[in-house]
Amino acid sequence: MNKRRDRLQVIHDILRTIKDKDGKIKPTHILYKSNLSHQMMEEYLNELMEKNFILEEKTKEGKTYSITQKGQEYLSQYKLIVNFVGGFGLD
Amino acid sequence: MVSISFIPDWFLNYGIIFELAFAIITLFVSIYSFRVYRLSGQKKSRTFGLAFLFISISYFIQSFINLAIISELNENVLNIIEFKNLITLDNLAIFFHMIFFIFGLVTLIYMILGGKNRFIYLISLIISALFIFASASNLPFFYIFSSLLLIFILSDYVSNYIKNRNGKTLFIMIAFVCLLLGHLNFIFLVNNQLVYVVGNFLELAAYILILINLIRVIKK
Image 1 (cartoon, helix red, strand yellow):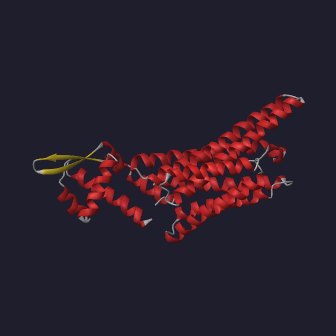
Image 2: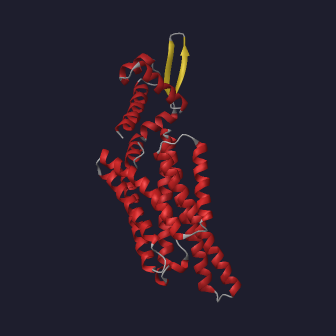
Image 3: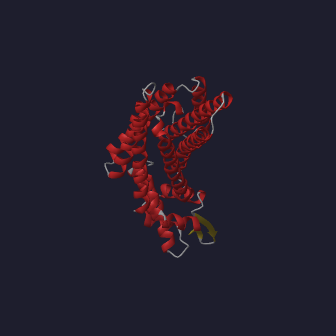
């Protein structure tokens, strides 16, 4: 349960970090805020892109990430998700 | 959940109300589960939603067909052909209830085992359906089979409760205890109509606990 809750929490923290940065953020900043290893962060970012929670944009200065509508929904419904997953033993 | 010939006369209408209530509660759980899947992309939620959808369908089928049978019995004096048709309808209701209920339990087990292989899942569903078909809708066989599956599911909820002792995990564990007791109880149904009523109340307790759990989850 804690492992899954942590996972949901990490996703929440990454999305929150992106949102708090007014939309666009560099991976180094996410790394710093999420307290993950570089490899773990890459895995999470790939998963979040697959789920359409974030968008990656490649610029001259490097990659930036922005939150999507689906990502915003995750943040606003985070409590429901965590409670449901914990309440029905889905972790 | 059984042939209407096993249901005491005074409980016929209550039985249908119970079945409808079970169908609606499990449908709500399924809807919320799919919603959580849509929001989070968590695959376990999707499988859980599918399991409860199967269980919901099993109760809806049973309740609607039983309702149709009882309406027919109330309205007409039946000739032998009409009576035979009703028995066929009754058997169909039992068969489809069994199939969908077992599909629900198999789906829950697939989720518990962290299933990622859809082929194995499909094979499990087909084998379960064949089991039910081969048993010719034999009620004790169905309840023994469902009880075995429920024991496995319950063991997971017990271990979940031991790991995370809180009200929510306790509620869901007790719900599955009630569901298991109800199904164990139904094994001894033949020649004892009271067993049917007791089993129904145990199931009602199970689904009320699940509903309370759902409401607590939504309200928080």
